[in-house]
Amino acid sequence: MSTKILMVCLGNICRSPLAEGILKGKVDTDSVLVDSAGTANYHIGKQPDPRSIAVAKKHGIDISMQRCRQFTAEDFKRFDHIFAMDKDNYANIIALAQDDREKQKVKLLLHQLPTEDQEVPDPYYGGDDGFEHVYQLIDMACEQLAEELNLKHTV
Ligand code: 4NP
Image (cartoon, rainbow, N blue to C red):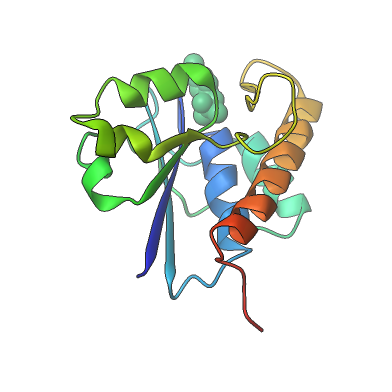
Protein backbone atom coordinates (compact mmCIF):
# COMPACT_ATOMS: atom_id res chain seq x y z
CA MET A 1 0.00 0.00 0.00
CA SER A 2 1.56 3.29 -1.03
CA THR A 3 -1.07 5.75 0.21
CA LYS A 4 -3.41 5.36 3.16
CA ILE A 5 -6.42 7.63 3.45
CA LEU A 6 -8.93 7.90 6.29
CA MET A 7 -12.33 9.62 5.97
CA VAL A 8 -13.82 10.86 9.26
CA CYS A 9 -17.23 12.19 10.31
CA LEU A 10 -19.12 12.15 13.62
CA GLY A 11 -21.05 8.87 13.56
CA ASN A 12 -19.26 6.92 10.76
CA ILE A 13 -22.68 5.88 9.47
CA CYS A 14 -23.68 8.66 7.01
CA ARG A 15 -20.91 10.81 5.45
CA SER A 16 -17.59 9.02 5.93
CA PRO A 17 -18.86 5.60 4.73
CA LEU A 18 -19.97 7.39 1.53
CA ALA A 19 -16.56 9.08 1.24
CA GLU A 20 -14.83 5.71 1.70
CA GLY A 21 -16.99 4.03 -0.95
CA ILE A 22 -16.80 6.92 -3.44
CA LEU A 23 -13.01 7.31 -3.23
CA LYS A 24 -12.48 3.54 -3.49
CA GLY A 25 -14.40 3.69 -6.78
CA LYS A 26 -11.95 6.26 -8.19
CA VAL A 27 -8.56 4.78 -7.23
CA ASP A 28 -6.55 1.61 -7.64
CA THR A 29 -7.41 -0.18 -4.40
CA ASP A 30 -4.38 -2.49 -4.78
CA SER A 31 -2.15 0.48 -4.06
CA VAL A 32 -4.40 2.86 -2.13
CA LEU A 33 -5.97 1.98 1.23
CA VAL A 34 -9.18 3.87 2.02
CA ASP A 35 -10.95 3.51 5.37
CA SER A 36 -13.40 5.54 7.46
CA ALA A 37 -14.10 6.22 11.13
CA GLY A 38 -16.24 8.40 13.40
CA THR A 39 -15.16 10.70 16.21
CA ALA A 40 -18.15 9.50 18.30
CA ASN A 41 -18.83 6.04 19.70
CA TYR A 42 -22.63 5.98 19.22
CA HIS A 43 -22.81 3.44 16.42
CA ILE A 44 -19.73 1.18 16.73
CA GLY A 45 -20.16 -2.10 14.81
CA LYS A 46 -23.23 -0.91 12.90
CA GLN A 47 -23.85 -0.83 9.16
CA PRO A 48 -24.01 2.56 7.43
CA ASP A 49 -27.33 4.41 7.67
CA PRO A 50 -29.88 2.89 5.21
CA ARG A 51 -30.15 6.30 3.48
CA SER A 52 -26.38 6.33 2.78
CA ILE A 53 -26.52 2.73 1.55
CA ALA A 54 -29.42 3.72 -0.75
CA VAL A 55 -27.83 6.83 -2.24
CA ALA A 56 -24.56 4.97 -2.84
CA LYS A 57 -26.46 2.12 -4.50
CA LYS A 58 -28.27 4.61 -6.73
CA HIS A 59 -24.84 5.68 -8.00
CA GLY A 60 -23.58 2.10 -8.40
CA ILE A 61 -21.57 1.81 -5.18
CA ASP A 62 -22.07 -0.85 -2.51
CA ILE A 63 -21.17 0.33 1.02
CA SER A 64 -23.38 -2.18 2.86
CA MET A 65 -20.42 -4.29 4.04
CA GLN A 66 -18.84 -1.41 5.97
CA ARG A 67 -19.01 -1.39 9.78
CA CYS A 68 -18.72 1.62 12.03
CA ARG A 69 -15.60 2.16 14.10
CA GLN A 70 -14.34 5.03 16.23
CA PHE A 71 -11.35 7.21 15.34
CA THR A 72 -8.37 6.65 17.66
CA ALA A 73 -4.96 8.32 18.10
CA GLU A 74 -3.44 5.17 16.52
CA ASP A 75 -4.97 6.30 13.22
CA PHE A 76 -2.37 9.09 12.99
CA LYS A 77 0.30 6.38 12.76
CA ARG A 78 -1.54 4.19 10.23
CA PHE A 79 -2.77 6.85 7.76
CA ASP A 80 -1.00 9.41 5.54
CA HIS A 81 -4.03 11.66 5.02
CA ILE A 82 -7.03 12.14 7.29
CA PHE A 83 -10.05 14.00 5.88
CA ALA A 84 -12.70 15.48 8.16
CA MET A 85 -16.22 16.14 6.90
CA ASP A 86 -16.78 19.26 9.00
CA LYS A 87 -15.01 21.66 11.33
CA ASP A 88 -16.23 19.97 14.53
CA ASN A 89 -14.80 16.62 13.36
CA TYR A 90 -11.60 18.44 12.37
CA ALA A 91 -11.24 19.98 15.83
CA ASN A 92 -11.95 16.64 17.56
CA ILE A 93 -9.32 14.86 15.46
CA ILE A 94 -6.70 17.61 15.95
CA ALA A 95 -7.28 17.43 19.72
CA LEU A 96 -5.94 13.85 19.67
CA ALA A 97 -2.79 14.67 17.64
CA GLN A 98 0.52 14.38 19.47
CA ASP A 99 2.63 16.70 17.31
CA ASP A 100 2.61 18.99 14.27
CA ARG A 101 3.42 16.13 11.91
CA GLU A 102 0.21 14.38 12.96
CA LYS A 103 -1.78 17.63 12.77
CA GLN A 104 -0.55 18.24 9.22
CA LYS A 105 -2.13 14.97 8.09
CA VAL A 106 -5.61 16.36 8.82
CA LYS A 107 -7.59 18.46 6.34
CA LEU A 108 -11.23 19.22 5.64
CA LEU A 109 -12.38 16.97 2.80
CA LEU A 110 -13.74 20.06 0.99
CA HIS A 111 -10.56 22.11 1.51
CA GLN A 112 -10.05 22.48 -2.24
CA LEU A 113 -13.68 23.21 -3.21
CA PRO A 114 -14.88 26.82 -3.54
CA THR A 115 -17.89 26.24 -1.27
CA GLU A 116 -18.76 28.78 1.36
CA ASP A 117 -17.82 26.93 4.52
CA GLN A 118 -15.95 23.86 3.17
CA GLU A 119 -18.13 21.54 5.26
CA VAL A 120 -20.07 18.43 4.28
CA PRO A 121 -23.33 19.06 6.19
CA ASP A 122 -24.55 16.42 8.63
CA PRO A 123 -27.53 14.77 6.88
CA TYR A 124 -28.58 12.54 9.82
CA TYR A 125 -31.64 14.52 10.97
CA GLY A 126 -32.73 15.63 7.49
CA GLY A 127 -34.50 14.07 4.51
CA ASP A 128 -33.30 11.92 1.61
CA ASP A 129 -32.41 14.97 -0.52
CA GLY A 130 -29.75 15.81 2.07
CA PHE A 131 -28.07 12.50 1.30
CA GLU A 132 -28.01 13.21 -2.44
CA HIS A 133 -26.50 16.65 -1.75
CA VAL A 134 -23.87 15.10 0.51
CA TYR A 135 -23.14 12.47 -2.14
CA GLN A 136 -22.54 15.15 -4.78
CA LEU A 137 -20.24 17.22 -2.53
CA ILE A 138 -18.19 14.17 -1.55
CA ASP A 139 -18.02 12.94 -5.14
CA MET A 140 -16.63 16.29 -6.34
CA ALA A 141 -14.10 16.39 -3.52
CA CYS A 142 -12.96 12.79 -4.13
CA GLU A 143 -12.52 13.47 -7.84
CA GLN A 144 -10.20 16.38 -7.06
CA LEU A 145 -8.45 14.41 -4.32
CA ALA A 146 -7.72 11.51 -6.65
CA GLU A 147 -6.17 14.03 -9.09
CA GLU A 148 -4.30 15.98 -6.41
CA LEU A 149 -2.76 12.89 -4.82
CA ASN A 150 -2.24 11.22 -8.18
CA LEU A 151 -4.31 8.19 -7.19
CA LYS A 152 -6.44 7.80 -10.30
CA HIS A 153 -6.71 4.57 -12.25
CA THR A 154 -4.01 4.46 -14.86
CA VAL A 155 -6.06 2.38 -17.31
P1 4NP B 1 -22.38 11.09 10.26
O1 4NP B 1 -23.88 11.46 10.68
O2 4NP B 1 -21.48 11.85 11.21
O3 4NP B 1 -22.28 11.61 8.86
O4 4NP B 1 -22.24 9.59 10.37
C1 4NP B 1 -24.37 11.27 11.98
C2 4NP B 1 -24.73 10.01 12.40
C3 4NP B 1 -25.26 9.84 13.66
C4 4NP B 1 -25.42 10.93 14.49
C5 4NP B 1 -25.05 12.20 14.06
C6 4NP B 1 -24.52 12.37 12.80
N1 4NP B 1 -25.99 10.76 15.77
O5 4NP B 1 -26.18 11.75 16.48
O6 4NP B 1 -26.27 9.61 16.17
